[in-house]
Amino acid sequence: ATDAEGFKEQGNLFYSKKDYSEAFNYYTKAIDASPKNASYYGNRAATLMMLCRFREALEDSQQAVRLDDCFMKGHLREGKCHLSLGNAMAASRCFQKVLELEPSNREAQQENKNATTLLEYERMADFGFEKRDFRKVVYCMDRALALASACHRFKILKAECLALLGRYPEAQSVASDILRMDSTNADALYVRGLCLYYEDCIDKAVQFFVQALRMAPDHEKARLACRNAKALKAKKDEGNQAFKSSSYEAAYQLYTEALTIDPNNIKTNAKLYCNRATAGAKLKKLNQAIEDCTSAIKLDDTYIKAYLRRAQCYMDTEQYEEAVRDYEKVYQTEKTSDHKHLLKTAQMELKKSKRKDYYKVLGVGKNATEDEIKKAYRKRALMHHPDRHSAATPEVQKEEEKKFKEVGEAFTVLSDPKKKIRYDNGKGPSWSCAYFFDF
Image (cartoon, rainbow, N blue to C red; front, side):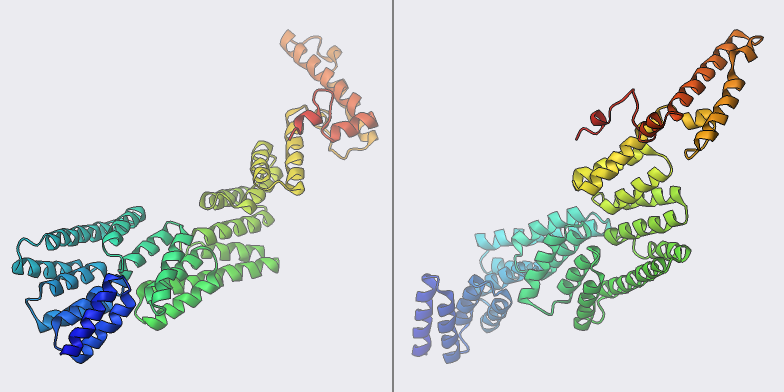
């Protein structure tokens, strides 16, 4: 017993110097020498708490009160350990026991209030999760973790909600912290998989889900996520394969099926919409392709490929203003020479679309020969000549005169090789290229 007391004194000395590892060693020696002394377990529990080893501290404080049910500090420490580990109900029972032994104990009164507060945050978080208000859950879990710093359950819930909010780096960091302390934690493995899955790293995600299921075979969330991830990857790959072998109809159908698998996977679905738009464009479903690109951009507004694809579809459907808007967005984000060229081309087509179409005025195609242009001019000039309409009303005469002038104007430009080239290149007397392309 004297040996045990000596070890305890040594432990106290190290504890007061904040050398908790040495204190732990001496309290352990005291316990080995006298295993039935409640205060030795109590002291070692206090040391373990300082080392943030709350599970072991809980065992020691429980052993202390088993040996001496009136050991007030033992009950208090047990309660604090339960609280730190997130078990508010058990904590509350311990603090109540302290208050039975010493009704005016301030610390127990305060800690009991903390346990009640913790229960309230848990209740609010559960309600928030049900309502898919993940921000609220993160808020509640931050408050709860201020009281229960060692609770893995709260950390996991927070990490899962961060992942569902798209805050992947934060979620990854919380899950990794837990895995450092407990590499077999199925929930943490699941959350890491979830982050990878939502970031479209589906193969890696599946590995984590499989690992989580190895640790906890009945982990429902991991099982569902694993099934979705495998199905999504298989469908997407199948669609890509069909597209590569030019089976555009099949690809379109497969991307459509893939989009129904998991509405929560924003990044993968954005890619699927864009892929379906590409297949749609090949099938000349240009309006649907535009809609698909818009859906992809709604899911991920930084998705350059979707803007480029949509802009191309706008060009093909002669919606030049929309094309210019998309190319401007792309060029602002990535100032490459290719993007600059695409923007310039769209701006030129927009400008051309706003001026008179001389080919239309003469009723010929853009590739008409000199001869065809002459013939068309003679025909149209005769059709609209003022002499032919001398008996018409003044309004009709005015309209026909205007058309006659336009035909002359069109012929003047298209019959002169130099002027025609300038016209075809979008240049004309009324505007300046240099002004239009001012970057």
